[in-house]
Image 1 (cartoon, rainbow, N blue to C red):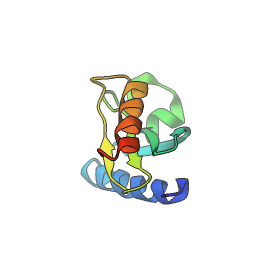
Image 2: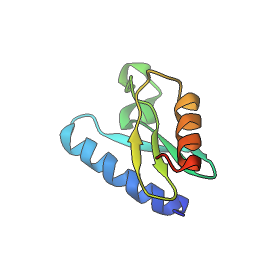
Image 3: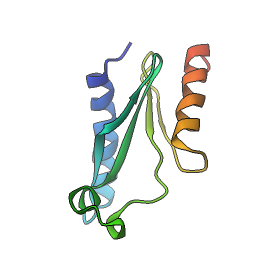
Image 4: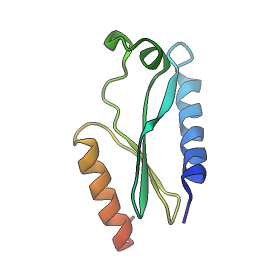
Length: 100
């Protein structure tokens, strides 16, 4: 089972890839919003400018959590077609059943 630190390292690589594609609008992990479950860990992210200023004008929209399967290390980068809670619940159920 991956620890929070190991899962965070996986997500940090994904964030680095995102930032390589958007050098003028970097995103950061919002660790205070991390959700840990038995089978998954979900991380939220937002633009650095929004985190620093709180100005919604600088916010990233349409981004859901990045969910890591603690057993396999599989990653799901979710959108906002469902709530964060629904995405996390669904991935937790699937990971517990061994379907993800």
